[in-house]
Image: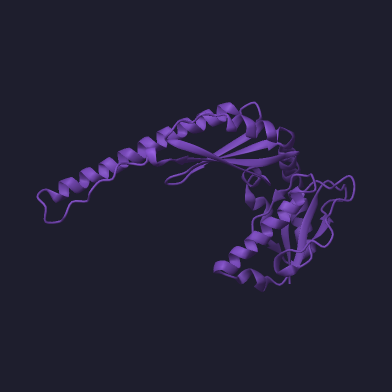
Length: 243
């Protein structure tokens, strides 16, 4: 059996722990005070380590339950620092010792995200932004090699141009909510640019309104999602993980 960590947060001024909360494999989730000054609270559970040796869809379901516990922490009105999925310790004492050693870092990060949530904006290309289809040359065609290289170059130029245009849209998004957000992190995949914002809970409606009124043109659309716990702003996730 091991002690599993879901998140760390600031203890409530009044009792705010949801009764009957269950986590991985139905194990009861409990709250423990990390430091004698009661500056930190950790949401944990005692589980069979074999539970984490799942794969495929079973592993995905465990990750969903992990996130649901963190969502329950956020629902108390506090902002938790999420732990990485799979974070466990030999026992409660090992967890408390580890978090006590990191107390200063964790308190600093909790202050940074206090009273805030994470919102995300996806910048997604529409059909108008997709590259024109190019026909691959047949191997027996004259100059097939040259035509193939031209096709690759054209595809690369098209992707680079879409990336430039997507970043222009991202800049417009950032400018529209710059006075509302407390932090921003961008990431991108082959086709989608993602922006994470740290937003005060009291500013959520204003944030959504500003983005709903933003004209990003015909080549892209934006998808706004959230709120959720500030996964992108929790700092180095290794501070909440233990092998």
